[in-house]
Length: 364
Image (tube, rainbow, N blue to C red; front, side):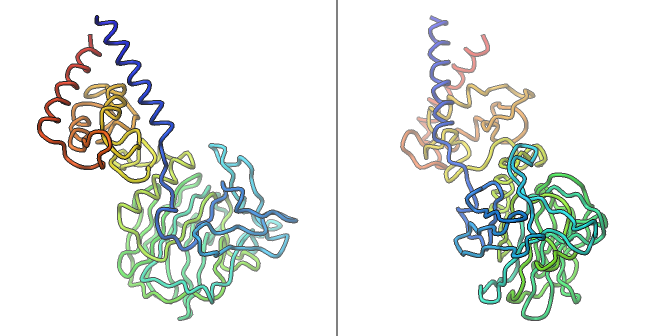
């Protein structure tokens, strides 16, 4: 009898795990409003010509593609160049002239109508700094300011020139990472892999962008002051996102580019990539929290102090235990329900009883 019960449980949980894999829909920035979204891993957005990448198409839906007309200024596409096998763009110096000429792309945004009370840039980069400038992006405004994001051996910061505010100076770290630069009235900051490394310094006054919007460098003619390294993804928002949206973008980028281990242990997407809609307890992503989700959770059960990187670790404390089941029970809907509602008391009692029975049998 015990063997049959165990067999049924294994069959049930295996089916649930397979269903989770088949039905998972990962969250992407297509779910939010982006201004410019460039993705080197999406080959359909890249046009190569003599010398390298001549055009990088915008995925935001705005059509804000960036280009490079000079063959000797085009970045190379590194197929499988990222540590997890993703493609990236290689940004190199020109004839050894650091700070002078580097690979770059850009567009004239004068007629694009890009304006906001703030802006936030997420970039996935492999920083290989060689000098003290190294700007990954520059935008000019109708008030004559330059908004700059820098990644160099003097530090990492975002600023608007002419004492127009920005962030403090965060420590430079070489290698693959996610950087977030935000220019906002008095909330400017820089984050690395989701953790703030420097906060506000001064007051930023926004204005519409005009002229050259540069990917790498101070201008897209010769790439002056551009960085040396690799660029995987570039997401520009003409606003400062709320915490939920920021964490979704961080989780999306981290799991896509193999950087999830760099996220803080308390990050909501430390153990699993973000998925579209519903509750985190909807482990099979079918729009409800039901017995199939509990099957996945039971299969991952470790008890307090265990070690787990399962998405069933809902409180992100490194194990799957009673606390995680408490979160899941609170989100229970039953088949066909809308995720994130609280179960009726009778259903909750039955689930608790079933949970205790199954966990007891697993421990025997």
